[in-house]
Image 1: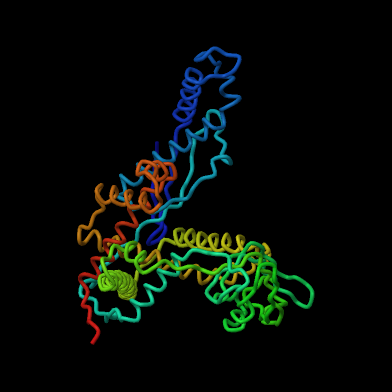
Image 2 (image 1 turned 60 degrees about the horizontal axis):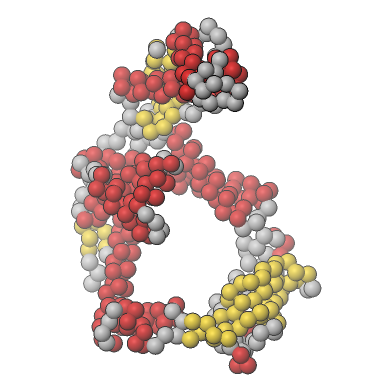
Length: 428
């Protein structure tokens, strides 16, 4: 196989290859013969399927597999002989390629290369900590919230829906008598108003509502409402209560048992520690994000445009899927995505810069993702999803996600390294 590489830019190259016709068609013929010996087909003895039958039914797939094999072989040869640091390459549409009998298989691929980075200062980056102490009021609020989360519903009866209760209801938004939005079977609380309804107005309207009652209050249609002609205009929010419940909180003793505390003092101590851990984690994440931003600001380098374009499109596709799930019309989705294309491109560029810089820091500091790291991550994912580790492994193998896992683990290591080696000024 002849393989040539031409650099077409700082982060781009073109790989050309030619597989002689005899080699390509010979590989196809061997694959056809082998398939005839191994596959089962109705009407033929196993292992005795004539080549012409295999060719008729499976020839296209066999040729595609052969082309894919030689494409990968060409890329491997190009990388090895030219010391290329490839981060992606053009995917060929094999169904549109035809290699005529007796002709060579020749193609060219656009390849994205990892940029050359002259790594500057990345240790001792300065920032200020914003970690705040845990206040007694936060502890009390957390315990109250825990009680609320563990509360059990009980029919409200003649007393009606209390302010801190919960209702199963049908919610409608109306303009005059026209219903422009309707959802049934919604769980709602008087203290959690829908968009466009004032909190005090909503709680007052729903408090005391009994099973089967209908309550109404004013609404201003939110800016993201699907009908543009109604955005910012006034209407009516109608709530029909199917079932009203009051929430019965657990006792103090039940909460202490849940947390594993012997008394009230230990309960507050445990809750305070948990809040402190959560605050520290959030602060560390904030610091790491700021440090990555500093790193990006200090380094200028070219990016592989094909990779940026792919990441931009991936971000827009994800946004489009989210909007489709909200039942936004297709034409509105397309229109909105065009307005977001520039922002998506900038976010993609920033993400690519961060990725390449973290790889550079990882290499400089010899930070590696080990098999133990991967096994530990599998265990964590399994525990989080109430699954078995072998199920997680099977899923990640089937979907080709282990490379992505390794990238994410390496990113965490580099972020932690930057934070642990930063010049952090503690709050006064």
